[in-house]
Length: 319
Image (cartoon, rainbow, N blue to C red; front, side, top):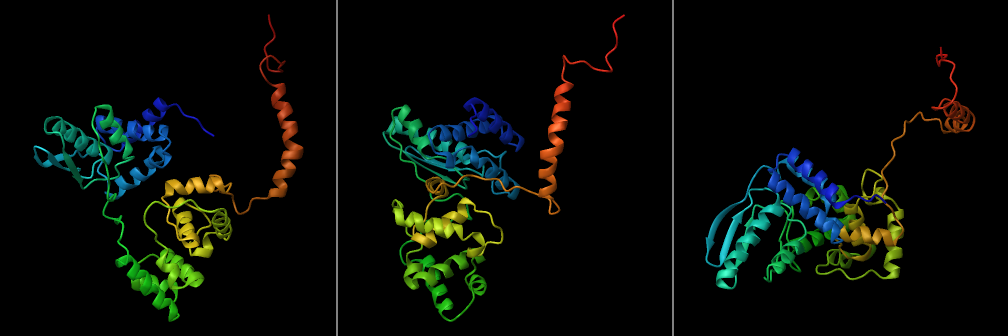
């Protein structure tokens, strides 16, 4: 386990965000928010988000140098346009304005549009509580590529049922993906659920609401499913990511977990974080083992004999 002091972590995050082009005050606020999330035990909304923010900036989904602006406001309401800046800052601006209005009128409501990831929502409620206010903070999505929760029997379920009809006709997952406009991985996951439970499996593949605790049997089922490897579910690389594991859990149990909860399940199963090792294809393990066994001890003894304080042939004789 690697332990890092909060101040050092904030300084690191601050440097990254400034390098991305964020003004210092916004960079500092975002860094502080992430570290506070880690300290609160919500690692899914902590500093592990930094690489995602860098990718978002590279694609234009996040504008680090932008600042939010007030579009419309009244005595008890305010609308803020985030302009795709760091969502932690734009949300904080909206909360501060609401508290100022609530202090005068007793109640206020605010909304932020064109926002990026807002971080841990509890942070804003805690901020308001410290100042004597009650704050209910909610979020709908993190950008145009993320959808809201679909109602029962809505478009998403109709698409899954259409996939079931195609599978019943013998259509392969790759073609189903093309016809439905989804990824091959999603089509493969739907196909797996359809094979195991038929139409019922597709109806239950996307439960909404707070996910229930997995039973011991469901955990065993998830373990067996993961041991099959990512390729069994249509992924091209043999690497388990949290998103992939969440998909497999949904296929196996019918329960959709946020990636922040997926890691807890993996720890229950005894899995650990691993970085794939890169090794040359011509690597000779037998030759390496022989070198470590026969050559390295002699080299180590030679190095030990040349340390400061030992005699040396090149040392000048005193006059």
